[in-house]
Amino acid sequence: MTAHGLAGVDDAGAFLARLIRLDRGAPVRLRGSGSRTALWARLPWDVLVTREVAGRGPDDATVAAAELLAVLAKGGDQLPPLRDAQWRWPLPPPAAETVESVSSIEIGKLAAAAAGTLREVTAGGLAGRAVGQRVVRDALLDHVALVVTPGPVEVPQRLIQAVSRMGFLGPESADLPDTRVRVAGRWVGLSAPYGVAWLQAVKKLTVTPIGSHPNG
Image (cartoon, rainbow, N blue to C red; front, side, top):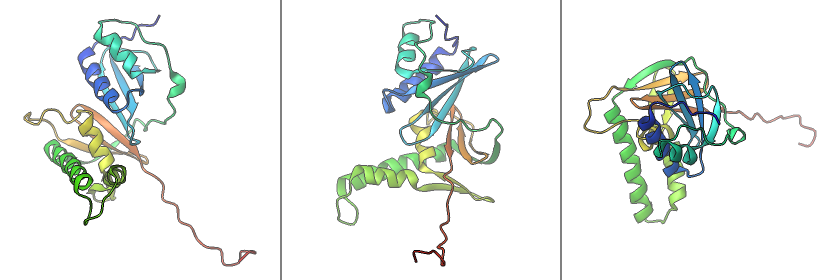
């Protein structure tokens, strides 16, 4: 059997524990390079998250996040059974540009405000009308929380919630580095102190009517 090669067990465990709280059956992709391994996963709201940990893992392998966490919790060194077919998403290109830096505390406040709105609207409705939690959640996730100019580069709540729910912002009381807004092709990312979240921008299509269509 192949060894997982992870030396940063605590860091990897924190990533995996947060991930499986959000999606128990989530796969995690390991990509080793030099003395580090990048862990990749996809959250239920279509955002990719990644964190680098110490130790050279496999060059490229996908396993069940829950199974890898169980191995690490027992102090084991074996990689769980491969599940490469479960990984079906592209990764952002390696070259990325930082376009803005934002206080990690402010990012945390944006995440908390959205969570508070979700609770309030779910409990009391909107303008006196009952609204389903899923409808409110989806609307909040699509809401553009930050706009970086020039560009513009839009940062939706999907990314804000990703770095918050995965613990990438770190403890509130800590003096932490800023979170960076990054761009790589059509990808927008938030690089927080303990990990990065990436979202591939949806290409906007313009539909132009054809006046001479034979069917009118």
